Image 1: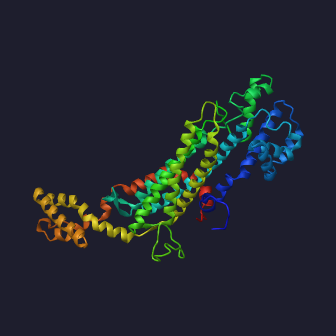
Image 2 (image 1 turned 90 degrees about the vertical axis):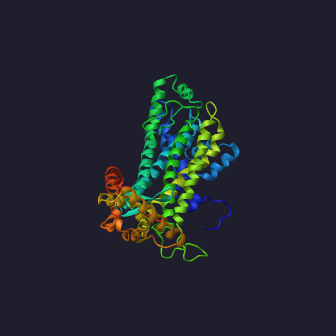
Image 3 (image 1 turned 45 degrees about the vertical axis):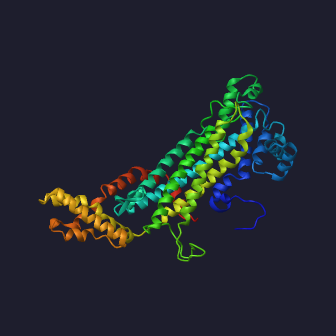
Length: 476
């Protein structure tokens, strides 16, 4: 925690990666604006407008030569950030000063840059999701046959396996990956649309030639890496686009919250823990503590993303007619922060998933404390098949089960139901030990995990092999 006289966002200083933070930094944004101005000038020159080769050369040479102090001075005078940077760019590319931003409105650079940055940020989220799927898939396969007590309503239920439970976490992230890839595929360039989206200014520039206006837009879009353009817009692209992206990030947050919450519950049961370094401190007062700090942090970030995403839907709903500026402040804050928080929580998920610690003996002990109750149906059927009276056997099991339950709840002692049944001659000849093999009660969990891994995890691992390997040294 460094010293600073001004507020610094914890999303940048503590949680998000340097790469995601840089993506939404001022330099990347203004460089993107300049690339858009360059792409527009190049397309206008190609289509016959009076844009000199020297102007293009200077724009290219100075894309990253940004004098932020000069831009700040211009903005103080004009009270307009785009105008300020037009002047600052013109200062270093004087041959292009006269043609810079010709026909365009502020939304040309602001909105199109936002879409470019959003596309890049979604790509980073996609890569982290692939790493999470890989890590949880490996964990699920490793423990696919290890029986564990299942819980419904957080009450003991039938058995499952540690790997099957992990596959539930993993499948949520597979769904998120599919949704994020869909959002990337459907993201379109805002385009070269003018002040109210009619392209009137560009139509005048080309003396009413509609085909040249259409070609101009295609050339610019291609120049910045977009295959498709929004067919219609107002002054801005529809803020429904932001809401859809934010909704996808909120979906990721829900998956993170579920995973981290489950690990926190299991840590309390001492069955599974997140990684804990030798020198890590769990509590400043209680030296013995091993708090699930990373999962708690991930839960907190997930809660923020789910909550903040709602702002984007309000913005989409309140864009009057062709646009209003009440989207600007909220959009500048919320969209970067949604990505920064998502980046931070997914890094935690990958780190935790790769280092999960399992305690099989604790898991087995909890199974043995509950399994006798769950096995009573099998015991009843076998005793009945051996010639016993089903109704009499049922009543005997009921009485013994209540006695054992009272011993556990009232005296805090171990479950002795098996001893009670073994001592009852009506259950003589029943192999209670065989009946109580936990693997008899996990159903097809191991097979389900293997099939899920083959169909869903392995293809992700193959497609993102390079990404997964480069994140192997992740440190959070």
